[in-house]
Image (cartoon, rainbow, N blue to C red):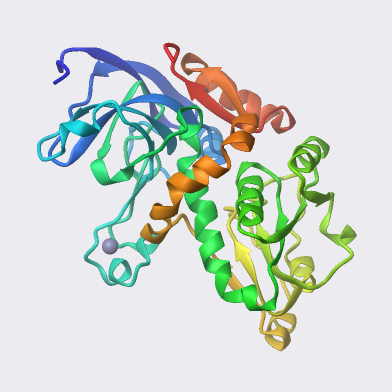
Length: 342
Ligand SMILES: [Zn+2]
Ligand SMILES: [Zn+2]
């Protein structure tokens, strides 16, 4: 047991522009929980948006954000085997009740009691130590990239959702080449999909090219029209005009547009083109428990590109980095906070 009078640091969010580095007693794992010494925590665009203009998704304040994290288990609560101590884990942040009709149908992202470490209702990983339920700490063998667990789960959800359309051919067009778009591209490629990507930023296009993915700068340049799915990962990005109408034109009859990126603005489209081609609009929100078993293998398979995608910054630099990302997104890709002694 780690003594609870030990003081540790964590970033606590109070409101927009109010994110403070504070000291507090080390969290103590309760029954069924584990204590993780966080080695890295990724910064998501959601963290930038919530810092600049939130709270929108953050609902229990103050709290510790950061939903892309992992580390080493250093203590366990009652009922959890001590054999877990010392294991390297990535955190699967979704918490579901298991009792509501959505959970029973395997749709945990719709759970009536939905929680998410570092985003919805529970403290996350912008901290030296974090406590999570034992079942949310997934053992992996790739310590440098434990901050990619959540993004991989989101990508696995997309992979699983599009399986039912693969009868039309495994061809996907992804719009938006940020970390989520690129990880989805790499995962689909790993599973035999032919993947192309639209990204307006030159540097991000070159980055995708370096992993063997063909790119276009805007969707109107894409010559083909028979993608089985178009996967939208652009998110709320002022640089990118909404291209929803164009996306429909790129999908084969019977195919689908998968919505992954979060945006709050209105979009318009013509229902007829969806109707006559029976093109579905399928939102893919977070992930479900179905994705968990494939996480470890996926992280291992994509380890090299995931390492190349990561820019490390010291733990203390969170606020400065959020401001820098907001000012100049072109200079950043997946930024992860690293604790100094790792
Ligand atoms: Zn995120
Ligand atoms: Zn539920």
